[in-house]
Length: 272
Image 1 (cartoon, rainbow, N blue to C red):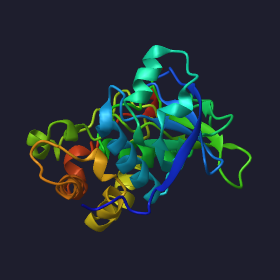
Image 2 (spheres, rainbow, N blue to C red):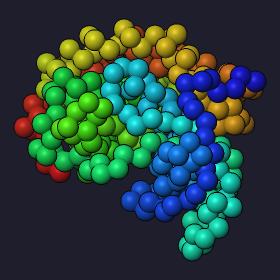
Image 3 (cartoon, helix red, strand yellow):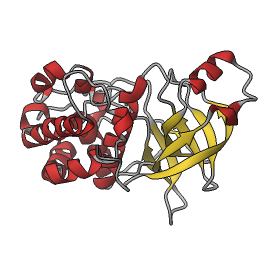
């Protein structure tokens, strides 16, 4: 079996700091042996391994397309490091997640993105909307933006950072109908950014051709075998990886079918 590539570093958790209860998956803040602090999403959560697969595929694709995503790492987790966690439901989650999990670099002082609170670049906004449409991300809305404002390296002013892609790639929950979803349109009505039509068309012209089978193969190689095992209809993790590449490469080739040309102006989008 093909092991994960070097695209993601591997660290070991040495201290469990606190659970985060803002989302249904109950990720946790964890310190690792590289002296880094990470928000860790666990394989034992209700969303399961596929949420972690989506985090890797969409997060690394976003990075390759020039968008800001906190570094993703693979985290070896031993529940013993959280022995003092007092809540039994959290302990149950952690004990069912022994082994390899996914960490995202913790951004100290980052603030949740709010429309109007950050002078976001409209070109960058259009790229984010395009990415979400391409990957069928249903969880970047005016009600749950999954965007953070935090200064990038070399900048004092906050910049836009993308987080939480576990709800994307909805096609992989039913592989038997995935082919029917290749050209499925995306519902933009409640997207957190609501970019203008012209910007979105320009983003499509810039990005679609960059999503090549070669790029996709490099990205899916970063997904650990353990998260792809026992997938119904597939014999090996590499067969599952090939299915992701086939689906996403096909969708990139036909963006005209799923990208609307009459996206409403930002002002007509619902308020949060």
